[in-house]
Length: 474
Image (cartoon, rainbow, N blue to C red; front, side):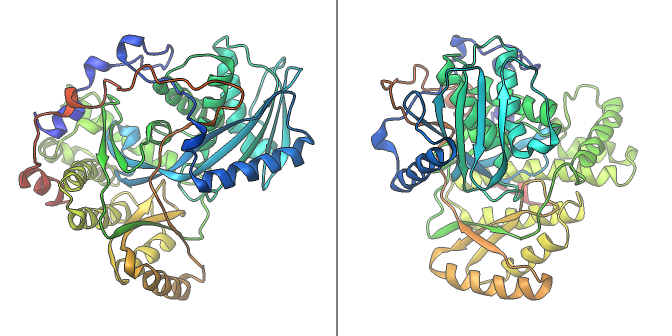
């Protein structure tokens, strides 16, 4: 069975679609466990020190009990854009950048939330109903997580929580999912709730959908919760089957470039695009009733039903079909160490997002044009929801300085905006990074059944046929 079929064959591992119930122990899902102090990287130690200082400044003490420290990464989606909410395929990776939280217990039933660089400070009374309050801004994300734990009957104590993050706000690198997961991991461990990773991921997505009001798919939370250092995550968003793909880029480096154009999902056309895909699938379902979601629509099937869809709905669906094939081809290329092919697929992805899905905008398109012609760049594309935010590129490391200099000069000349460059590393998913006051715990379930040989064995080398399927006509 090829990689596409194995990714799409996840029914034997299905979880409740309403997210109501934790997965069983038999499913082998992992629980978050504290990391050993010695595993904290030097830069993380600096951030933990900064966070400790910020906690003291905010609360005037180090709490009634020892501080506990938690981390959740941001994520960059390497390829597979606007496919997650259609049940399609994505290839994100967790970043070493993210959100840190210092947490200490209180003696009352109030949770105080403070974040460096953001106002206001928010108090959350656990004896009262928790609601989304616009003036609370960023704090609505952790508030939603707190409310979700309370709704499950978890006894949540009063807490002081200080957040610190180094993900650019509104840049499309999942600062919101990072904030959700760092809060969820902290509450899960501190309350002994015992939720597994997948349950926490689904809980965070539900909070963003229902409490915050952004109709996102599951990719962001999944990458933040289950990312792995040195690997991308190939995910089927319908079945939640996934595989970690080695990200051995050789002399090339992942570079995220912030366009300087802020975006807000609530004010963008993100929800409109999602509705267009839903409308398109309703029409397609009349002619292909066996399809469970738009992500199952293949090239041949698309050719047969395309004529029934009006413009621009047909363009939106065509992007989804082609992008799913690009994801498969990208995973195959990376497993073969073929970075050049992956770079070409990134370029194709941006053109599709620009011409078919129309979610880029003048700033991201200008950044794409100047970056793809810059020294050392073999691939670049917008990443995230679009309408501003960031691009992700593959740049030869020894030419990185020349790349940044030329892109900055030409992009500013075109747009009047100064780009910000982030050469990034791929890191691990959400976790406790300093288990103060508690012994280390081993992970009782080291393998998730949605990952590994049961779903992906037997493919061997990815034949050129698969790669051509993903590139030709895309």
